[in-house]
Length: 185
Image (tube, rainbow, N blue to C red; front, top):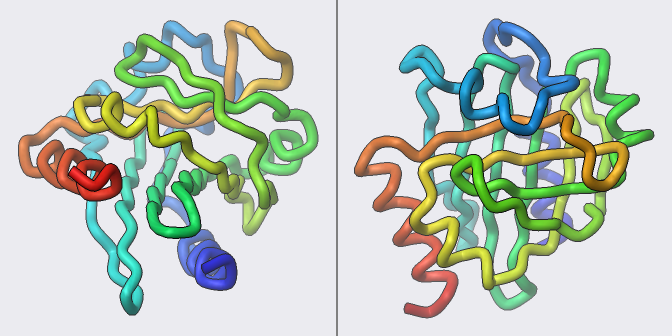
């Protein structure tokens, strides 16, 4: 599975994002949902991707602060969140200094993510693979926005990262069904 993930990361990070407005290099925590993706111009795309017998859930959105992508994977080898963030010339700085990782659900509760492995810059895309606690699945099933946050110092009021919304009913159903299947419901 690890080789599959590395091949997947190469495929997903070789293209440049479409006309990102501003790179999310230093965002105030409370500002994220106010500015990011507040317009229909930044519609999210959620899909199931099948590679052989393996299926993962992918979300992507080119928002006010640039492009971000999530891939959620669950299976016998554990649950994973692969975050891809187009950081342009800031990617090396983020990799070097970003030491704390969080997932914010609906602009409210923030959950600490374990250190990623791998964590690297591939063509100005920050790639971070996290082991994901299944306790987050029920919360993500009902979410309307997921924000990936990288901070240099724990508890900062600023971060680098992106938000992907889950607005329309078909996307909500897709996300809910995927995490339900992962939880064996």
